Length: 325
Ligand code: UT7
Image (cartoon, rainbow, N blue to C red; front, side):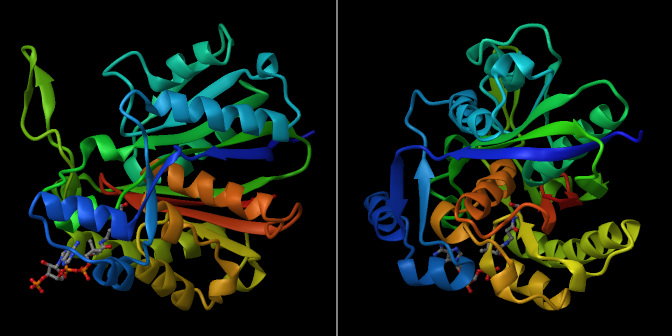
């Protein structure tokens, strides 16, 4: 019997501290950084974001999302035999956030590792977990996106610091004789590494280069719109589907204008898209599983529906996963 993988539960967690645009704008004003609620809403669709407290790490957010997903999937932690965390803001240089999360969950022995593909991290992680399940190497995987981007924001740079937030989302992916993950399409092009990066590195006991996020927003915007359309069409073609078959598009949540552009190119209505960028900002690798969980828990995204997940971000990386929920 062919082996497939299916999502059997979703979960997410947002840090308690929520900052509306108005609150962020007034905090930035104190530092002489000028921005406005109008600009942020008009250019990005973002109205608020959550920031982790100083002692909260990616693994803390991941842990809380995992408690929810394990409950939703009715899966005791001890049955998990693979943990993959997509993050670009790990707790430490090493060990991986996945190993720290594994220990917090009280699981010992199963493989656990991080995937670093920035905002495409979750679709990369889901694709890897699917491959390991379909090859028989794992049966129940925790696939997590967790980020504390607030740690790497330059609060003197208004072109980036208003865009990002913190959070975590997770799924349980289980072996199944019914297809769940139908197709996947991943890409990267390192020639664009410089347009979205946090270039600092630890060397000789010091951070060499800037430890803060830098982005050429317009360059990222232009590339994102093109590759998201290509990845969507590629993954649909692999599964012999068209966008007309889709129930839901759940893209990376960076900018409502990119999301509207993608919906238009795929001839989808905005009602077929889960939008969380307004309340979460851009949570990088966490944004897709966060949005998926919001869609599922609100009762909009239902079992049996055809869902397209799409990510794009630093690397430059991009990719899509098509699944039947
Ligand atoms: O997660 C990975 C994927 N990331 C993305 O997809 C992000 C992609 N890029 C974007 O979403 C958009 O490019 C941004 C939201 C980052 C910027 O929007 P934009 O419409 O491309 O704005 P812009 O960079 O062309 O800037 C327009 C103006 C500039 O002023 P001038 O030069 O026209 O006088 C900026 O200085 O807006 C100014 N500006 C701001 N003004 C008020 C830039 N940031 C701000 C700000 N508040 N926060």
